[in-house]
Image 1 (cartoon, rainbow, N blue to C red):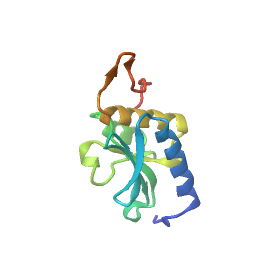
Image 2: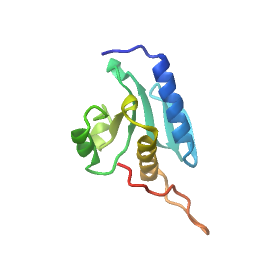
Image 3: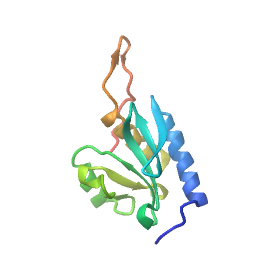
Length: 134
């Protein structure tokens, strides 16, 4: 199941993830724990994982609302999994080859909302509107 670290598929999925995460306000990409990781105001909301510990998955790890991890894994185990380290805190792993852009964008926006600091302006909330992600 192990896969090389620098495959064309991994690069394509990373470009896709960069495009979707970059559409969210104040997103910054940095390398963290050896992988491209996406932050909002110094808080992680998405981490790319290319065959982490040789698991063969090209995935993204994101925080999810309480109770969603087990529900998603139960409903779609080919798409969702419990990632190492952060899985105990309710994060989900998403196999990037098993999910479309629209659904992935909804999950990323929900993860962004979960970690972004709350801020208001005279014009109202600056956060992306919820579409029923996760």
